[in-house]
Image 1 (tube, rainbow, N blue to C red):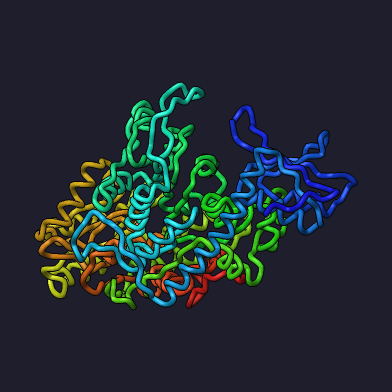
Image 2 (tube, rainbow, N blue to C red; image 1 turned 180 degrees about the vertical axis):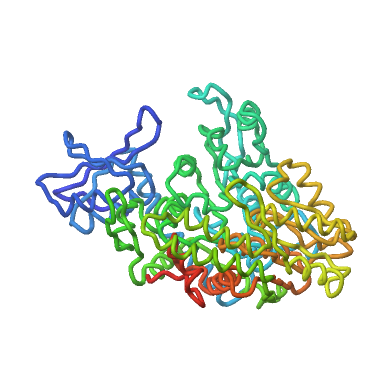
Length: 614
């Protein structure tokens, strides 16, 4: 129920910004001057603007801003006088908030008790392709809430869960079918209704194929020239599929639902984030898919959740969010250092759990839905020449990084040189390479000819030079391989390589760059020779890259236990990075040290503890 109108009231109305067409919530602050009330009203939404001539605050219209206004009124014993166009919106949001809280409690009970859930239609009759338990939970939650984050580890079929939910939206008539509408401001045809899927560019075709596979749904891929993208943005289908960089082409369209793949792409305030927030306002449903909702920076959660639930979880004011959960210190003009307060991570996690389904792979493995993983680190000695060069470079790097004027980017460049030496080469300032004797190549060849003979093996590298050397060695040894790294820019070539890998038994080795281990399947479970072995020639410090690359073979459809072997240079940054990644694996939701502290820890600590002090 709306608060009763008291003697002193907050007057709230809607205002449409002429230039952008965006809706703003405008709240009049009643006299006399009340600094405490003014301070609370300033924190209702982001950005907040004070209009001195009318004594009014304005904010972008969000669900959270309306709900926060209600809370401020209660706190100060005020009434709220809504304009007619706001009355129904406010009433609906309050009712929806209460309903979705009840839904969450019911879902949590179903997860806890493992009670049977009703089956739902899919586009396959195969028992091995029926939805898994966690996908059933996702489906029933997604149909009953306006906002949901599937925060599942990579490889657990998040995209299939979202596609099944999309099918349910259509079957239950919860969303309107897509239809053409004329967009006078853009001077072109657009659409209203249907679903928008926003995903990294490399995943556009995969989403289109999986929509057809799992739900028999048609997806229009917005790719090609600008003219072609604009034309496709006005084409009717079950869904439009667009990458984050092309969002401008769907502005003006009003979708009934939005699915944001790799939700962490909205971690920062950017033009892409602003476009997603505008699109989200008219959408009845919003789903986010991510394996790293809270990975490196607690602050990054704010805009992700603002898109998902309009600020219901963490509020609509970034200022209020930072003040509540962070200690802030000005270290230089315009530069503020933010450290999470004690207990902030637990508090934020609790708040976002209202619409986030967290799931670790270990939980799925315990249910027998996925095989286990085994990690095997092999510590290899450097050659004498390689060790001497490494030690000299390490001393120089430590002294360099400790210089107060050195930036995090400059520190990263120094550590990268050490990582190159571990892989048997180093690039000088002119781009010329110096090579060392590298035992990693010899050990890999021995493994491929002995314990891994007759089996497919995915091999991950970091540097292009590293990939070049390995591919030349495999070719000389007569071992069949495919290559996927930064040099493979043609999509057709990339797709052909993946098809060959997943169908041809004679191709024994997949050579890839760890940075590109996103959105591809390498377990080759339909080939006579499947893949369940992975070898890391090197690792980088990105936890996300590491997890994503592992899960190219450890994903739904894998029938065998997966083994990950790491070829690591003894007593080096190689080994330190591996230790740091394994330590972080147990605290993936923690906030971790960043910048120069991170690189210095890798070089100076025997067992680097990369967790922040918060």
